[in-house]
Length: 430
Image 1: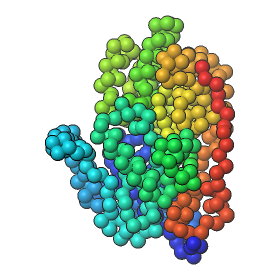
Image 2 (image 1 turned 30 degrees about the vertical axis):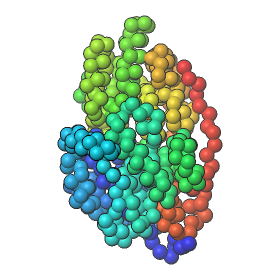
Image 3 (image 1 turned 120 degrees about the vertical axis):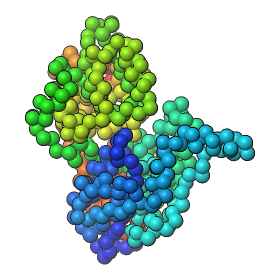
Image 4 (image 1 turned 135 degrees about the vertical axis):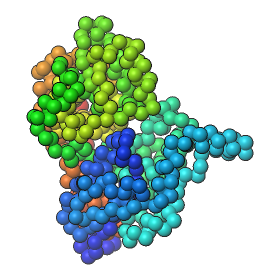
């Protein structure tokens, strides 16, 4: 083992993903992690591998211990053909079906020497992409949703995910995930040694972006015509985010209880958006529900502060960052009682069954009509937020990198990686 004080560690972070649109949870937490690692003291250095065509997308968040390099041009070519993949996939399927083989390329890549030439001691993969190399690696598994909801994915996507995730879980020195729930899932699904899976909680991604103040809140109120109290749901329109279930609950309250709740939804609108929009119109909710699409991070923080409460009806989450973001800006939370969400929420959220329209509706009504409950959850959220810190998260990742590189861990590193996780109490469901 190498003593960390004797030689600095160089860590490669593979940050090759689109940053122009469709920003989801992985990108936002990577921004937070890079920002926090850049503030750490010590000799360790971080090499951020950006996409060839937009390598410096993380530059606004970097520190003095971080440098940026362009990723391989072949990765740019791979992304450049993305709009044509459905056509290519169909042609490929016809060919492979004709010869009786899988329609998916052998997609677990092997490094051609690019990563090894960076002079790094370890490589970190924060996204599902995993590349076999001669370097020890740390692999982030955010969730295994494809094994629980295979109907949410195409056949090719299922094959891709399963090959990549298995390769990463088998080939990485350490697997990192953002909740105990996902750790248990990885161990159970892939028979992975629990000692190789490290739970590291994220902190609020919006913490990286300062809140400009009341002037912005007034501007956002005017810009989006927010004249009445509203519930906020910040999430991309992916099918597992359960927007349609939430719309059904809002319509249920209108029709069964004469309660017209205002709802504001933010987030990138992907291929499932047309189905959501169709249901929105069919339910006649255009006057009650606003879909704002992607908005500026500062505006999102303003919406958290303006919202009467935040609702998070997702069917599947590996971490559930909007809960932390809501608490960061003093918004009370009601959320699904599934997967990692009760673990993250602890006693700081009102839980409901996301598969039951009546359960969602009951939670919405209770939050809207009970100011004492909202205030209690606001206080509980502030206390729960104290359990999450970007500084601690960054130090835990640094300890994982040191361990993967074969460096001897000091007492602080060992304490940071010790498994002190215990069962946490949760609020009762509606």
